[in-house]
Length: 260
Image 1: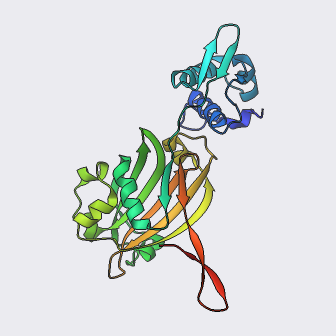
Image 2: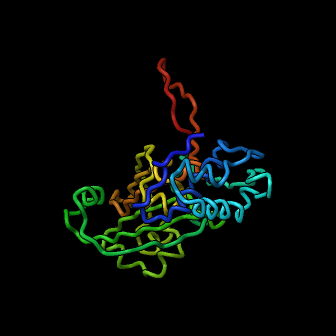
Image 3: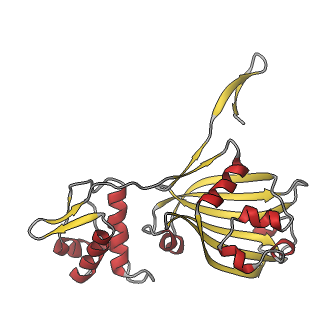
């Protein structure tokens, strides 16, 4: 089992015990430490990860408090039977409606919001002049109080001014856009795989470097005018997208096309 000193970093803002906790929790969730396995002892983990035994003990106690392990005198720390970890599902078949339902069925945590000048990239995506005022909003989405996505949204100032700040932490963005008179009718998105940077990893409760699904999306109104730019990071163990295609034959040639 590959525990090394380089896995934790005292220079990070995340406490050492929490870094150790996240590393162990990740291995349990991925089945590397399976139900019934004995976790390496406090002294061994402290040596392998170059931290104090107190740090390891606190991390193991956190895991035990969440029911992921049980601690036994003489036996050590044992991985508990897996519990139910709900998965959030999105669909390409009817993307906008799927996003609306996801917003209604999950919880929101507002991290921060501020008025900023649009960078060249943001301005181009929103069809605005570089440096134009935009609203930057960072939110977490949670299911059963556990985060599964980290969302950074940019709104044109003309739209953002119509949205009360207090609503940013309580209502889905699609609903807020509709109330502001910017009904979304079109979405264009790019999907990539990436690794979690420190700030996003801390917010999502995963170790830095964990695999994430990154989706960049531009939302447009019925006139094709951009009303929202969003960059979303999704935990790979808590979110999946579904796409169904079927083969359609219009001529001698055939092509795969998306249903819906």
